[in-house]
Length: 94
Image (cartoon, rainbow, N blue to C red):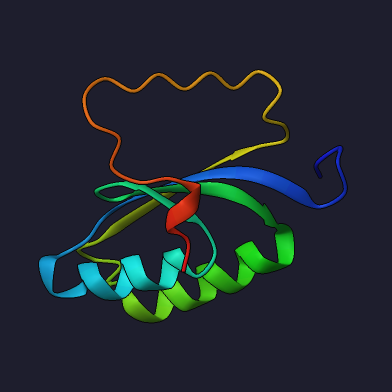
C-alpha cells in the first residue's frame, strides 16, 4: 500500500470521554509520539497500526468516542509549524 515497504507516517487524533482519556493516551504512546492533547504522530508499520487499532477498539465506546488516523506514505513533503509552546515530541515515547 505504501512505497517504502509497509512503513507509514500517521497522525492520530482522538476525542473520548474523560474516563477513557488516560487509557487511550497510554495505549497510543506505546506506538506513537505524543504531540499535544489528544494528538500523536509517528512512523509505524501496517501490522503495528493494526495492533494499535485492535487495542483501541477494546477501550473506546464507538457510540460516544472518536479516533481519527491520518496515513501518509512519506514525510518528504511534511512541514510542521508550531505556534506557542511545544507540548510533546519524539523524546516522549514510552
